[in-house]
Amino acid sequence: MRTYHKGLLTFLLILMVFQTSCSKDFLEIEAKGSRIARTTLDYEQLLNAISLQVMYAPSVYLGDEMAAQQSYWDAAAIRTQRLFKYEERIYDENELPSETWHLSSLYTFNKVINEVMDSRGGSEVQKRALRAEAMVGRALCHLYFLTDYSLPYNPATASTDLGVPLLTKADVTQNTFERATVQATYDFIVKDLTDALPDLGPLTHRRKFSKLAAEFLLARVYLYMLKFEEAKTHIDSAFSELSKATIPVGLYDFNVVLDPGSSETWLPDFGFGLSGFPLAAVNREVIYNLSMINFQLQQADVYVFSPETAALYDPQDKRLLLYSNEEFFNPAKVHPHGMRRYSAAIFNGIEVGPSVPDMYLMRAELKARLNDLSGAVTDLEALRTKRMPSAVATVPSGIASNKEDLVRFILDERIREFATSGMRWMDMRRLSVDPVYSNTVKYTHKMYDDDGNVVATYTLKPERFALKFGERMLAENKGLVENK
Image 1 (cartoon, rainbow, N blue to C red):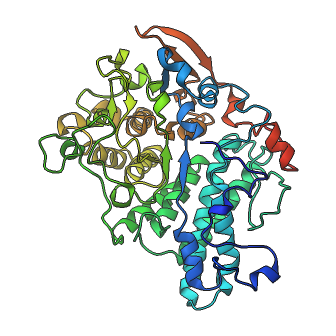
Image 2 (tube, rainbow, N blue to C red; image 1 turned 135 degrees about the vertical axis):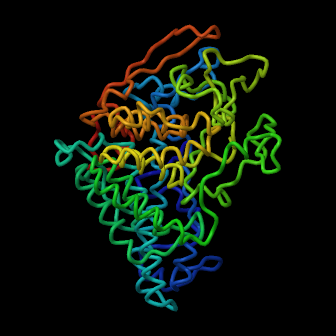
């Protein structure tokens, strides 16, 4: 879905529940049929109206776990073709990038941050809590903005590499934007999350930022910065928040929910996603609902996970049941070399925000990196026993006792858990600058014919870890500097 707008902050504002203006005179007059944000409840409702969804995120088509099928290639959108081929130009001169999905939400978050403390009717505690939630939202939006348009965090160059503009005003007239450095952007994100922590509450709703979500995001940010001890501190704090949640939160047992004979099964699959797959609102693995919508009917059979990805799974791994080895439009035709397309909950989207599985995998990786190998194995097996029979869930002893092998096994587990979701691209970014594990990143995409032969190979250049804004975005927003 493409979003057409003029300037970074003007599009989609007509969808706002509350109409606002920068004019003081206008704010003093309530137009008929509209409502001006004045009370604390008004600002709470502003936050409640936000639904963060990533429509066809570029990360889905960039991850090195992906492959493409030649037979259906012509049905794919030009944008996704260019992303998959790692091309320098993603958009034509007259097009605006669709990766700015988060900017309209930033307007709302900034409005709450800047105004809620002066609102009427609420207590100091209520106002501070709403401001804290908005600060987490602002940090999250900047983090995704950064991962689309900046190079990965490299401690040696972060102070000079270009990040993204720091957007702190609810001002639709702003059209000049200066890019901060990567270091300054990360510092800004960390400060928002850290400042928000004291005023956040337990997890009560999956579209409401909680202390659990903020601790998780701080851990993820520090992991991206290769600051493993700091990341470990915050993922431990996130685990301590799990028991405080007032809604069900935990891991599903795929041995049960993907067993067709179980009363709790998500099966059968009627061809349009698992029939019982839980919506985000009741999915107990979801900490904060950030959905990535990637299903497009015309390209349902174009993008699959690669043969190399298929080889990572044990045949008894129940996660394979979330994918189909049959073509969407021709079920009699099976993808070659074990390649599969995601088929579970295709209309609900894939959750890419804070989640319980990611908590276990993140802490396992951090424990392993910090030489707590037994602790890492415990966390890893806690997840694996919920994904496959116990007989194959145990981490092999030779791997469990070797730090580097264990970290690599955990990185592969992340692919097994999050394949085709876009999460692999985020891992590729941080691992590309990792002094030990940079060789886990593959820099090629392959296209296959119906017989499983490679017919094309595309190579990722390191500078393409940062997408280009394009000519029109640069022309309409003064001060932006293009990526190389």
